[in-house]
Image 1 (cartoon, one colour):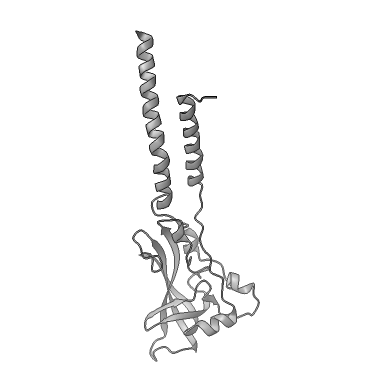
Image 2 (cartoon, helix red, strand yellow):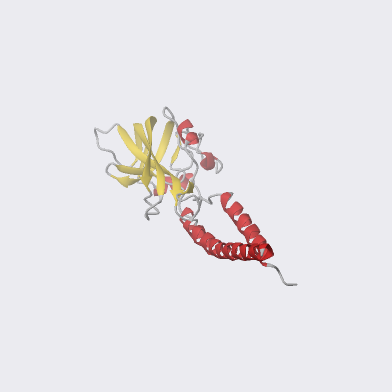
Length: 218
């Protein structure tokens, strides 16, 4: 059976609506790095400190992992008043250390979400913590994803998924990961491939309809 132009147009519009709806409800798939065990944290860390989170600030920064333009992270800086150093060395007069945690803020494409999603639970000011760090000098970052833990250690595997505390109120209020340009760039290309033929068919359909109307009037 031969399909009319109007039927073809309606089917194209229906397909476009289904695809667009799917994109609108698409969730950002974030890659989760498996947490370290207690033994893994202790062996991988260059510096281990115990102390209290004294200050807390959140900034937006270009991603250090996905470095292309349009990829951004939430940078969470924790100032920790140090009570004890269990591994490595701090300067003798240094009684506090600032460490940088991060979470994904936005990515340009779906594939760029499939990298390290950052740190899991991040504590509120006043929380006692044990921090397993990598870096040097004044640039220290906790191991991802669970390098910031409660100061109470445990070899129970379930402990390392929750780290001994919940996310801070500040992080709960932070917006979840999203695409920088509303949809991933690769999907914008797919939409253009769909929209262009639809536009052509709409133009032809309207022209034919106008011609039929003119013939009927004559």
